Amino acid sequence: MRRARAGASLPAVSEPATPDPRPGSVASGEHARVVALRADLLAWYEDSGRDLPWRRTRDPYAILVSELMLQQTQVDRVARAWPAFLAAFPTVEALAAAPVAEVVTAWRGLGYNRRAVRLSEAARRIVDEHGGRVPAEVAALERLPGVGAYTARAVAAFAFGRPAAPVDTNVARVLARAVAGAPLTARRGQELADGLVPADRAAAWNHALMDLGSRHCTARSPRCPTCPLAARCVWYATGGQDPATGGARRPRPQGRFEGSDRWYRGRLVDALRQGTMPWEAVEASLTGLDEDGRRRIVDGLAADGLVAAGDEGLALAGGEETEATRDG
DNA sequence: AAGTCGGGGGG
DNA sequence: CCCCCAGACTT
Image (tube, rainbow, N blue to C red; front, side):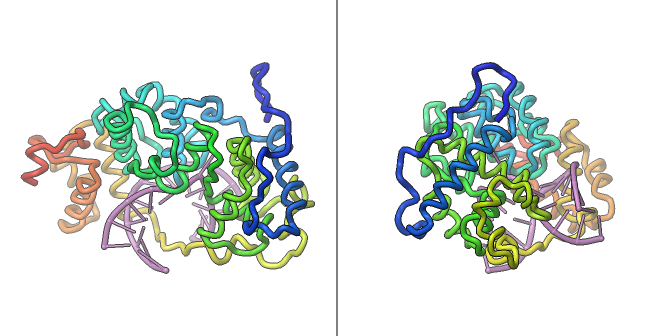
């Protein structure tokens, strides 16, 4: 990966310290091919990997923030929001001490606002239960709100260099196409990824998989002719139906966005970032919905810990249960 | 296993 | 217009 700063280059490619893939995860006859694939991908990553802001730090808190932001959210948008968020909340203690309303406000433009509530709560838990240190173990990370299988492994690998294998949509697609050559269930994909991660270069390896999925092994129209793994890729060799479109793919229930509950919720939360709204203003923001619909939106946001009813109307949640909230 | 949760970028 | 995105959580 090219970085502007001198002396910031990544370590040279070398064989992993552990002689994986482990038996059972990959057929032993394919060991040589997988080893070559890994070397090729790491070499490509060093030369052509993305230089993203959160890859320049090892601060576990900053990396945790980036991973929460990156859940179902494109890199470019996170790249814009992440520095400002960290400027507002430089440490986990600062985030833990901040009212939820301020965190939600700093979350503007990222979407899925419940993540801001969960991150806020996670910060409090890290301060209260982990002495202000982000846990390094996957199991402990997974107990934090908003941190699931992917995010826990991402933090373990990127912040602590643990040999964990975060499997996001990019990695799952690359593994299904290049390594398995067949659709993978989530469980099989995780197992395969676990067996591939080099113990001494976990961060680079996982970043490399993600970057390949972003730059070449894309979902829509993959750029196989220029892909650095073309010579090692099972799908490219065998052809046939795309392994990444079957099996583990999930349906697409999402309907029209405008006029949906998500759309109204997003609009209302964004309006509330300006401050408390009188009930008439809330009603005006929800034009097009009947009384039941408006109640559904407001109650849903309250249940998610995003908003709370106050004396003057509706406001972003302060982080503590108020009398107004309890009284409804 | 299926639904919900934002919003924007790209074909 | 449609699909997709560095997922997590509830039912």
